[in-house]
Image (tube, rainbow, N blue to C red; front, side):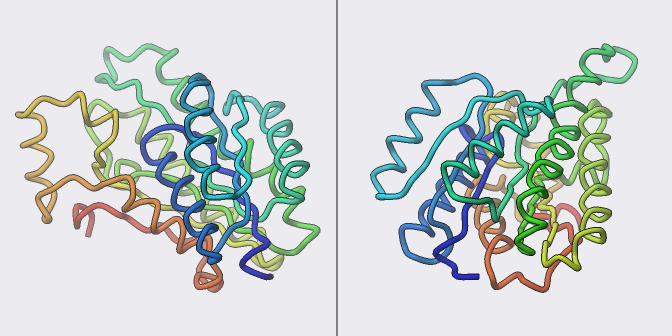
Length: 253
């Protein structure tokens, strides 16, 4: 399949890692390397979505924001239908939507547990299943799921988040086996501690503790994740599937 005809859908695309992914794919499109158009999904910030459309629209590509609840399968189907109509098909899906509701398990509410599972894990089911309806007939597709190193090693105070991301990893490996014969790859990227809104709220002492766990002694940047997503979406990664790639400064070895 020609590099210039690929079409990407990114969930959770207005902030942090998601925004960096959208911009990375758009920049590659601008350079004639990967994509021609991008649809990104968001849940709340209309202003953020318009800002991204205007900023990336300057690159002379088609980019569309679509407001949806990632935990709803109906919304996922509506999203993919919209994307297929706007882009002429769907080749790439990046499942990035995610939230945190941190607390020790003894203090964690049932709602905080359920909400994290719904947004972080069920959304991957929702969008992957909806996207496969378009990828299977064309015998081509790339699904990249954003997991976390927390889903590999766990983290105190994040039982809900760790469970959701561990679920994403298991989902990735299982789906990869189901669809490999249709030339559809499914991989996961597991970020470590990245400079986003989630880490911006940490105080200096908390940051020192985090940095002590990272051999490279610094937080990652959203662009570090976006570039790996770009590679996994490209033809250079055609023979890679079912893998989990930590991007964490050496935190998990």
